[in-house]
Amino acid sequence: MFKDIEHLIRLAAVIALALAAFVILRAAVVPLSFGQYGHYRGAAISEVASRPMAFAGHEACEGCHTDVVDQKKLGKHVVVACEACHGALAKHADDPGSVQPPKLDTAVVCARCHEANSAKPKGFPQVATADHSGGLACSTCHQPHRPKIETAKIETEGKK
Amino acid sequence: MDITRRRLLVLLPAAAVAWRYVLAGTPEASPNYRLTEHWWGMLIDIPKCIGCGSCVRACAEENDVPEGYYRTWIERYHVLDWPVERPEVESPNGGKYGFPPRAEDGKNFFVPKLCNHCAESPCTQVCPVGATFVSPDGVVLVDKNYCLGCRYCVQACPYGCRFINPKTKTAEKCTLCYHRITKGLTTACCEVCPTGARQLADLKNPKDPIHEFLRTHTVQVLKPHMATGAKVFYNGMDGSVR
Image (cartoon, rainbow over all chains, first blue to last red; front, side, top):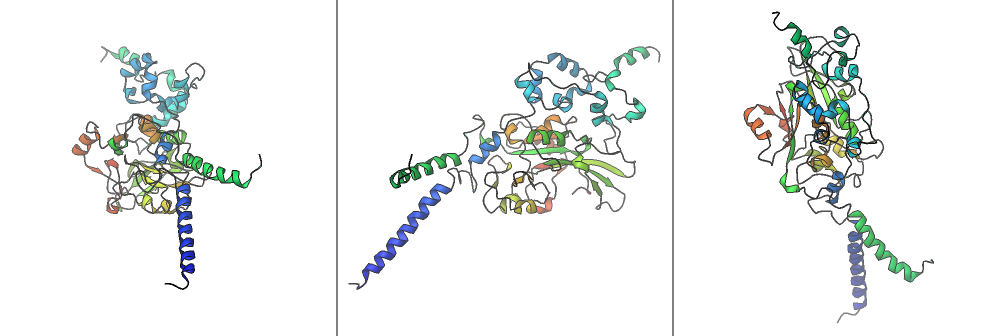
C-alpha cells in the first residue's frame, strides 16, 4: 500500500514514547493530593494545621488555676485571658512541673493597656503612669486579677 | 553495593513511588475537624480597640513572624475635621510595642488589620503555581513547600497583608491561626485581645454570635468596592478608614 510505511511506524513509535514519558514524569512530579480540593496541593491544609501552638488558651489554664478564676470573676478583668498578661504558656500547660511562667513586672504589663492615649476609647480606664504612680509597681495597690481597690471603698463607706 | 543497570532499573520506580508518598504530606492533623462545616472570618470592633499591641505580639510569637514583618498590625488614625478622606495613619512597628502619646488634636482611634480571608481573593487568583488558595473552610493559606517566591500575590493583595519571609523566601501571611481553629481554639490574637475587639467568627455555625451581631450592627468590610468578598467585618468604622 504505502511504499515507506516504515517511516510512519517510526514516527508513531516516537510520539507514543514521548507521550508515555510525559505521563510517567507527570505522575512522578505532580503531588498526589494536587487537585484534591482545587488547583493546589490538598495536603498543604493539614501541613498548615499541624503547626505547634505557643498559646495554650485560657481554658487550659482554668483547669488548674481555679483560685484565680474565682478572683477574676469579681472584677472587670474577667474578660481578659490569662495569656494576655502572662504570655504564651502552652509549654507550661503541657508540663506544669518543669516549665514555670516568668514573674511579671506590673509597672510594665499594666501600662501596655492602661497608659493614657488620646486614641483609646474614652470609657476605657487609663492613667498617665508617671503622674499616677511614679513608676511604682501597680501591684503595690492593685490586685491584678481583681484590680479595683476595694479597701478604699470600705474606708469611705458611711462618710458621704 | 554497586549500582548495576539492572538494579537501577528496579530502584528508579521504587524511588518514584516513595517520592509520591513524601509529596502526599503528613496525615490529617485534627481528625475530628470537618473542612466543609466551617466558613471562617473575623469581627473587629473598632470602638473597643485600645491599641495595646497584644495581638501583634501574640501573632509574632505564635507564628514565628520575623521581626519587622507583620501578619496583623494596628494602625492609629488621626482624622481632622477636613479633609476626612485623607486621614493621617501611623503604625510604628505595626503597633507591636504600643503607640506613643499624642495630643487630643482631632479624632484619634485604632484600627487593627489582618488578612481579610477574602472569598474571592485577588492574591490566590494570581498565583502561577497553585501555592496559595482559599481552603474549603474559607481560610486563605500558603503552601510554603510549593511557593516560588515570585511576589505576584504580595502585589495583588489590596490590603497589604502579604510579605516574603526573609528566611524561607516564600510568601507568608495570616493563616487565621489555622493550627488553632482546627483544634477548637480561637486565634492567638483573639485569645489575648483584652477588650474583645477581635472575635473569631464561624459563618457556617448558626450558633455563632456573629450572626446576631451582623444583624443588629452597621458593619462594613475594608475596600468593599473591590468586591473581594472580605470576611473580616469592622464595626464602628467611619468614612476615613481604608
